[in-house]
Image 1 (cartoon, rainbow, N blue to C red):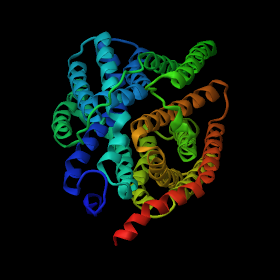
Image 2 (cartoon, rainbow, N blue to C red; image 1 turned 180 degrees about the vertical axis):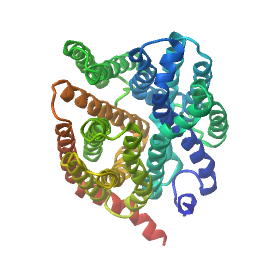
Image 3 (cartoon, rainbow, N blue to C red; image 1 turned 90 degrees about the vertical axis):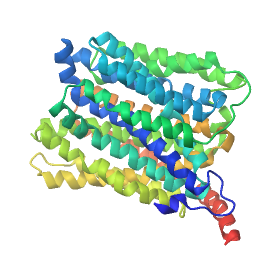
Image 4 (spheres, rainbow, N blue to C red; image 1 turned 135 degrees about the horizontal axis):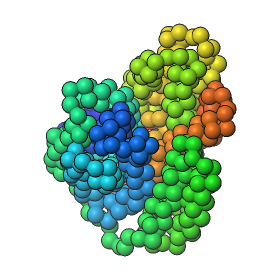
Length: 469
């Protein structure tokens, strides 16, 4: 860990000692946004009972947060260039903390949904620019290690959310889940204002029409995926998807003409970036699909209880927490595409072994397969994220960060929706796991295609270090 805060002559980014507080601010902000999703999921039955609403309506307490967060990722990333990333990050944290207080005090579904939407907007502000802030804080030679730390934080948040939510609900009511964010948020606010890199916003206008198109495009897409995943009539999902496609086409046309586009076209002219985005989206389809499919496999096909199912999921995020930082560190030294490709192979093998899992398999049979998936994803994600951030021109790193966050969210949502679609068609749950394998195979093709380019880029980063030594 001390290596992350070392300083060498010629390093870009912040000086070593200044990185500590800045990274702590990012860790706390990311943890709050990630833990919130899985923690609140546990409380949905309690919320439905206390507010006297149906379970179906209570689900919107989670859905609205995720939809708003996903829809505003690109908008927030672009807006940060005008006011500076530090100011947007602080504003997002403040909004998230304020909305958490409002959610804790809410006594009706309408008010709770309003504050959940504001929480989602605050989370979008912080998550959309997080990777680009890592690039500003750390020198390029340490970026893989830093993004490995980020992967550890995200995986740890997803793993800790259900346990933390269950622990709080065992001694207090659901409003305390939101109140928990207040002390952490205030600490993170102070750290972010003090320690994040100070920069000037760019001069020029903001692409308001492009922002509106982005929100409608992504919001419609996620509503389509949510409708499909929850078994609603197919025409509803197709209607939302049609809106997303039409507005998406108009949005892309707008981006080619806008003076300050939300999604700069030149970003996707970089082959390494384009291939890394493709690999990321497809891999997250596989992970999002597996997380939902395995719940049904373990409980409905194999007869495990919900508690046992929760334990069977644990090796996946734990493996990412253990492997992710190591993978990030190695990606600063060896070809990151080689590591990412190796991770995709292991993830694919893990999903295939789960699809072939017999109904009478025991806990250990399931645990090692789930752990293999986690090891594979932990090997893939930090090196691939490093590729996305380092292949983008530095002046477009904020846009690249927004694309990274949006790709992850779109991929996960598409994976969840595919499970719902296959189950609505009465397909065996194992089929969905094989679809996850196919997504990983396509991701592997994209990862292998960029391997020579990634090797050349890594040698260029290493050469200045050699001259210094």
